[in-house]
Length: 260
Image (cartoon, rainbow, N blue to C red):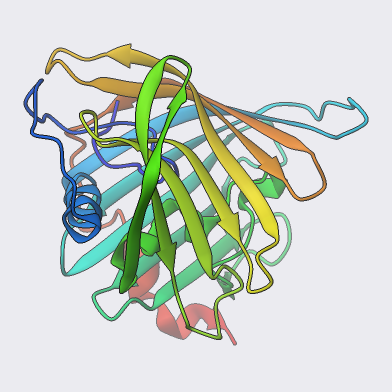
């Protein structure tokens, strides 16, 4: 499994890097945010996951499989979302990059529709799930306003509440509340709110496993949307030393092929 999806996503985050088993507890909000940013750095990784969406009325959509390939550094972050199955997502992909300026650019390809590259918004949902491209970059850890707001306990784990806030009017997400297990550099619960302080979605880590390095990696998580739908994400394989080639992110070199 990879060392840099914080994102996963988020996100919350799907896996953790090889920190010491007993790192010092961080009390400064700025230092904690910095540690979360650095925890995502990777020369190359791949994560394969099963994704299932359940509506609030209990209706479950057919599951899908996708791969997330990434390379993350202080200068640039790049992610490639590639559909594996079923047929409706096979041969579809999103390529996204975040520059040091904070700008996120995303490109989509779907051979079933246009057969060409098109620009996609950073807040696009990946393959009709509640996985959001923007979330996968966890940009809130770079926001200037960070504050610590006490502690909670989730599933038997102590975590520190961190509020990340942004005044950027172009972002539909203006505040993110994370409950961070400081010893694991892992957000057990991530709540994303809009400019009206309305909860848009919640990312929760539901299952972890102990890695050889001695830290926990999140292997199962859920995303609860504003409509109360739930997207279940489960990692089933990965490579935290994935070899990035010159062709991995070649979509960004095909600017002339993009429909604007």
